[in-house]
Image (cartoon, rainbow, N blue to C red):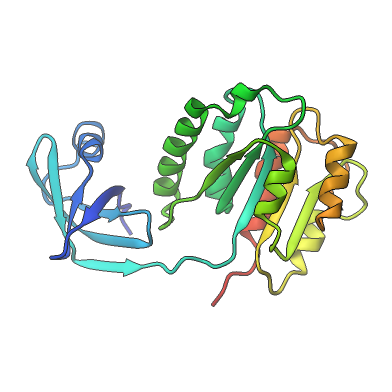
Length: 241
C-alpha cells in the first residue's frame, strides 16, 4: 500500500477539507505533491479524511473527502511524567514518547530546577513537535503536554489513575513484568526524575500518592533514555475494544 502523507486541516459542513496554509507550503514546496495526489487530512480531534488533493494556488489547497473516519478517543491515558530536563532534552523526547505510545506528557519542575526550563518558549516548541509527531505516527488526536511548577501539582493530575509506577534505581520489581499483567485499567503513569533523579522527599510524596517503585533493568539509565523505554511498555497496555 502506498504511503499517504497526512496534513492538518479543517473540515467544512459540505465534507470538504481545507489544508492549513503552512501545510500547503509543506505539501507543494517540500514534498512536491501535485494536483490529484492522494493525501490524508486530520483535525487532531479524531477526524481523518482521505482523498485527492486539489491545488488551487501556491497557498491554497483542498481535498474532497472520498473516505473518512472518526477515531474515538481512548478513555485511558498512558502518561509519562518527567522532571524538567536541560534545555533541548525534553524537545528531543517529545517525538519518541508520542510515537512509542504516550498519549499524555507531564513535565514538572523539581525543587532545584531553574524556572526557565518551563518557560513559554519551551511550551511552544513542545506543541510544534507534538503536532509533527502525531502526523508522523498517524495518530488522530492531539497529545497534551502539560508543564507544572511542582511534583505535588503533577501528582494531583493523575490522582484517579489506576496504575502508577515510579522509576527508582533500588526497585526490585520490573516495569515490564508488572505492566504485562495489566488486563484492565483507568489510566497508567510512569514517573521519572530529571538528571539527578528524584529526591527522597519527592519519592515519598509519590509513594504517598500510590506510586509503586519499579525499574527498567539492572542498570541505572539516564532520564532521556528511561523515558522512551517506559513509553514502550505504556504503549503495549491493553486498549478498549
